[in-house]
Length: 570
Image 1 (cartoon, rainbow, N blue to C red):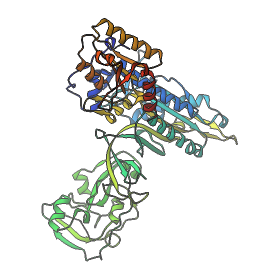
Image 2: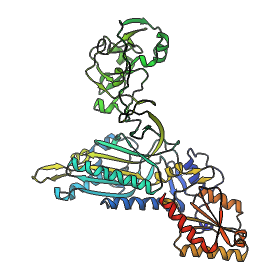
Image 3: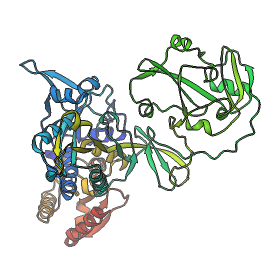
Image 4: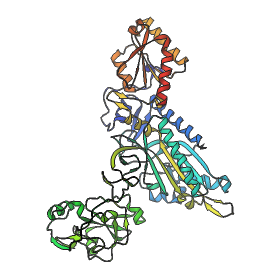
């Protein structure tokens, strides 16, 4: 490929709306161009990167017996209505009507389509298990697209679906898919972490994300210092805190006028927020419930649906709180009846707590669980905090930022039961097919790779997904002899099997060419100049290094092959 013929140009300035490094660099280096909010065109360089990512995906899916399909991007509404997601998903689903006034959906995912095929094709346990996959366009009408390709509206995904006769079979296959994802990221030269995650709208019995650690990441990742545990903050848990329980003291009512926040009350009474309890009231399907947790902890809204049994809940209104007998700003379970109370595990990590008295302007001190506050059971309802103990090894938990690049789910029978995708087992009993679902966004993976591999000059592509292996920079090309030498080098490298981008621009100065080479980020730069030719060689420099060295012209291909082999293996 000749640089002068690229269907794009490099940009000297960062786009005004570029929030993330990847957005900035992919735009400036000519990999992508925006069409509309959250909708991008992939240009020549970007397409080459994505195709290499997708080739790795295909090879790893085929390795675990996947069969590639191409599924429609436009679906009839009926299949989404069968599963209930037509009604449960909000405006992020793009709905429209065709010319016959039939409701249609532009695919944001393909569980319903795969289930529809399965109920028509799978009749017997002898046909299971199966795994099918595709690489296909999807659309999710994100309210706030951001970060270039990190959060977009139109995107391409590799999504796979496994079909099983038993949960044991799904449980046995799930690690194979997880290992395949690890292999995909490793082969792409990326450092991804597998973490526990929330299933969200996908549902199911288990879920894991794969994230690339990057400061620009939109997700908070909780990691053990010993690498024994990692989870998204939404689902992370910690070990029980080791605390020295104080001797219970008599409970005393204390006036706390105009003090409704934990910080104000704790400072006034002379204790830390960790020695307080806070109570939060919610309406769950028109029923008032109370959550109680230690004052220094934060409620995790993603954990509440699992406890409430529904995602239909909201904070209670002041008049709803008053109607229950609780007092806003001074609420607690003390003296309260007719309200379901959920206690967080953190209330067990201490004693002699300060709590609301359910009386305007008053709290109590020395409230103790078991004596004054009686709970039937305890739940994991709060966010973990940095410094909490690992639930696996008791090491210290810390936070990092990460970009989600893959997500795998044990869907179970959520879709097959609602769509009646059943099979006959060996005893002739009809049972629902059990499903797993697995996805990676190829464009997002390209952007995440840039977030993980760049410097202040531009992109530094890992060799396996770089658009080209070698960036040949020709200098002094207005001289006929120099032009012929550079053209001969380009032909020889191509004949030798190298993937080469040749900067053949005559008018561009050396500084411009070198800056563009750094910006575009191809792993190996080979420079042929009058000075290097006079010295009998060419300059070779790795993109991630600062210095170049001259190698004899006769040794160029041997040296480049060795470099490519090393960089492919990293």
